[in-house]
Length: 436
Image 1 (cartoon, rainbow, N blue to C red):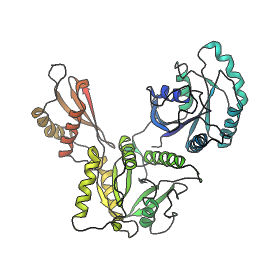
Image 2: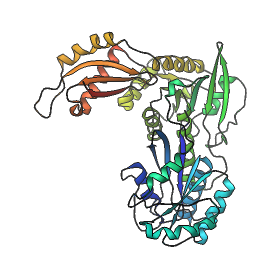
Image 3: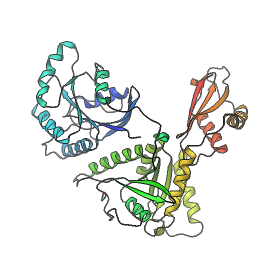
Image 4: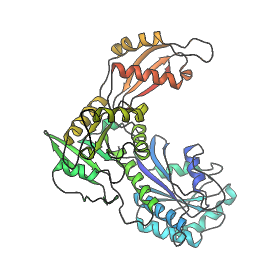
């Protein structure tokens, strides 16, 4: 399932972050009347009328500025435009179209992407007269709105999501098994793909960001066609480090959305770092099965206890994600590289597993009777019935009298008991609570 990427761009202080927050329905981006407040990028998943998309908030786009901060913001905005399926170009009704707006419009026309021109700060019908002058930007019919007041945001989102398909279950997609090879720069993603297909189709150097474009590679494995998605680095050379990281994050999100199983590569010499956990959280948050492959294992000094000690330390850092399988590999020496594929296939099959309702209740209801949920209201909280309502990813429904009172720690308890009976190795599971 390809999740549409929607980027919000515009010059400083036109209300981009306010619009971002309005679409999401909560305060996520920092909003201030000082231009240039938004420097770091914000990503979030949004939904409108059953159509899901990833929303990207960018800083104020100043095409001709020499200021180093504005140059960084400009590069990141340009990357967002390149990667986006839809661009929301926000302008300010109170100022009219300024030279910077015309320059941004010129860049957007060249990009040949779907552009929705949002005339922000149209707080009433009286102010809609200001919309007409924005036709001069050459980007079609302007859409009046007020991000601050929420005025005509629904009409705007109808325009944005027009043509998008409604979200489909990832497990329903036909075709070959899709494996996304993801991880931080220079962890060995391209070397891993080259070793699998036994030919140098990907450029490999020790310079992070060498991969210029995503290259989908078909692997024939024991009579099965498997699609390997190698996540890209930079499409073009950047002078600003933050732009490289921004581009890498966007590419990773898109690759996760396209895959059936995410293979997260770690560098054995560095271990699990904060950036790896961010990638892992994105994959699990999108309910993608995950395999962890610890690359460069040949560079680690070891004895017969090293792998066990490394695995134990890694699982302690994974915490709630300790159900993920770990494979130690070397892309350079081709050590255990095909075990990663075997593990990914097994994890994908596990994601499609369905547990019979009677079996599920026989296994879990006695556990619940021994350790019942705690009630905040004093009224007894009872879980009467459990059933699996979906596969790929698995979702389990627990029917009870007061579903809104089930606390997070008890949800975790139930997931642990579920995994004791049915491990669902590598597969995120969801628990929902409904009134019987």
